[in-house]
Amino acid sequence: MVSVTSKDNIFIFEIKGWHKIWALESKITIPKEKILEAYQNKEEFTFWKGLRMPGTEIPGFITAGTFYKKGRNFWDVMNKKKAIIVALDNHYYKKLIIEVENPEAVMKELNSK
Image (tube, rainbow, N blue to C red):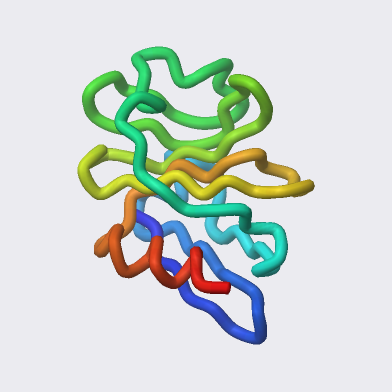
């Protein structure tokens, strides 16, 4: 699970609980201008997430960490129904695929211009 907060046009994606250990990451900070869009697309949740470096994947349970598939992506997902995809421009990660408490509210906040 990831919580998303904003401060001074910077979004802070904070990885919660044990997910920090599984993802080998605790916080990702991204300037608002680097966020292209936030959306949901079930077709992007394929069985193969990419080459894992570093991270954790237990199929059907959790995908967390850095995965390389058409670029470097960060995953932290257990429940696909609450997962969103955040496309980034010119950032260390190409996409963040993360599970959040309220997907609709987070997408609305990230997509606000």
